[in-house]
Image (cartoon, rainbow, N blue to C red; front, side):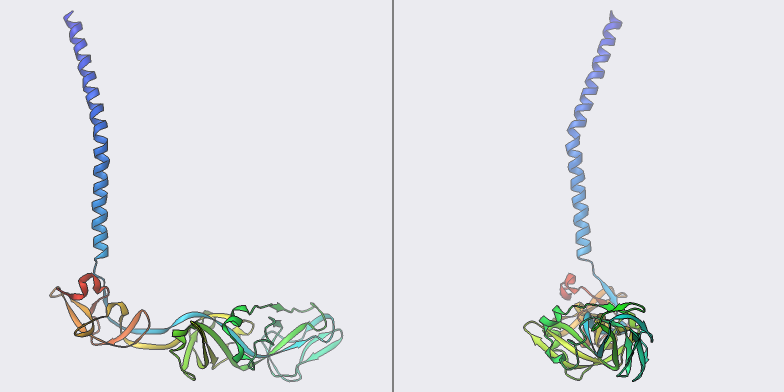
Length: 319
């Protein structure tokens, strides 16, 4: 009997221990999740504080700062559209983009040869805007009109059936091309008539094309510039709207971010970090040129360690 009682007591102890362990585990779960939550909160707070208050430093370098912006422009060419005098299948006698002379054979339709009457570049493509966007009415363009111009592009091909009166080809004089560029009134006001500017487009290569501002208009909060290109990009022979980088000027010198500069009673300047002394000092600078992000300055040396977010150091107070 004693052995049976001992076995019974042992089983009871095991049950009590298991029940205690299960209860302890259940009681510990809320504390475990609470601990994880507080650890995550502490980690997030430290990380956020560290990132938010990190001092960003840029090494001042001699470089180029482009004063410009990416935009879209409307092309206006000096061009004449020839319409077919007959209906029939056309035979094209010259190549797209070729410079043709006065009196040169251009096409043959219904046993009739069509001759050219103006020297220039040849195109068998039209977009329906040739007679609306001309040098004569360029001053009549408004922002509302600019937004409503729509192409109806048509490229004619050899052996295609052409109806009488249909646009057959264009002759484009390649000595002048204009661009109308919409922008806000603040940007328009920065330019003067006959000022030299530049454009750069991917399809035109890496070089800059020189241009001249010939007109500017402001309508309420918006406006546009009209510029004359000094060369004729043949890549834009059949294009009406183009995307490009419009450049007012390119400045060279020691460049730093505009946001690094702030004003104190001592004047306009930046914070410079001295790695040998491990401290910061205020240095007065003079802004020469630049754009909205970067500026060319005088007053700091090449290679200076400039603080680009001086607000995290309370703009140098107490450092």
